[in-house]
Every structure is written in C-alpha cells, then in structure tokens.
Length: 195
Ligand SMILES: [Zn+2]
Image (tube, protein in one colour):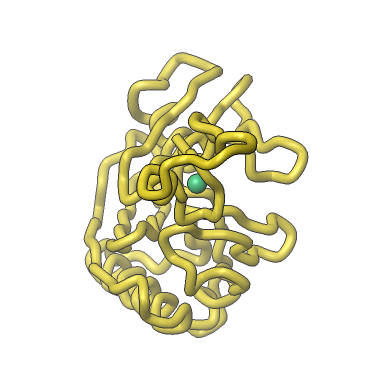
C-alpha cells in the first residue's frame, strides 16, 4: 500500500509522521525538540535524523519527503525568505539542505506549515467533503491556510494566507504614542500590530 512521510518544522519542535495514503493509518510518528538558535545546517541534521528514525519504524524508505515549515518561501528555489520564529533559516534553501543531510538521494518538497495542515484537514479531518476552507494554526505563532476550490490560495507571490501577520492594529499615523504599548505590538516578522 502507498505510504507518505511528512515533517513539520515548528518554532520549538520538529514533528514527523508516516502514514498509509489510503485511509490515513499512521505507521510511524515522532518528534525532536530543537533550539531555534542552532544553525540551519544543524536543523537539517535533526530533520534527517527524524526521517531516518521514522523510516526504521515504518520499515519503508521514502524517495520523497514532504516538509511543512512556518515562514515565507521562494517557491522556485525553496529559499526561506522570512521566518519570524526561526530566523536562522532565512536565506537558506530548505529542500536542498534537508536533501543533502539525507545523503542527496531523496526529493524534498516544501510547503508552508499551515497550508499543508489545511490540506490535512481536507484530506482526513474537519474539511472532508468541502472544497473551500480556512485553517488557523495556533502554535509558536499564528498561521493560516486557505483552500479554495480544492487548491491552495497562494496569491501573486505565493505566500498568501499568512493570517497571523495580517495587521489588525495599524501603527498610529502621526503623533506620539505610548512606547511600551507600541513595543508590545512589534511582531517578530518586522511588521507592527499583527493579528
Ligand atoms: Zn507579524
């Protein structure tokens, strides 16, 4: 039976699971904590270690690995353009890094973590039988995934649906404002007043 292996890179934990594509039965799962201050190369190593552990548990070697990660990406190159909670990933080509850490013989596919979670819900969870849905993730940060007509809504630059960074409290235009209050509204993404 066909199986798939997916990895989720969050702000504090790398999680992974392997499952039967038909029916979704889990055949392996696990996680590894990491310090977001470690260099990207060390993060690739943690991901590769988890993949290999899950493969041993599942008794399957996967030629393609799916990775969900918080952040904004260049879809052509896999470069992490922005990651509010994992700044060490910025400027790094995540699929290339993970593939190299796995010895170079696998294909690594990258998608925003909330986007793949939205597909997961449509595949096996709350979104079964619907073609349009919005998913909100509440993890280290707030993420969002938007599925319209069974397709991800990506927007013109491929990174739409970042609901956690929609500005809901705009910076006051002109005039002084309360400094501590303003500081609290500075987001790690560099914007101000994010949701
Ligand atoms: Zn933000």
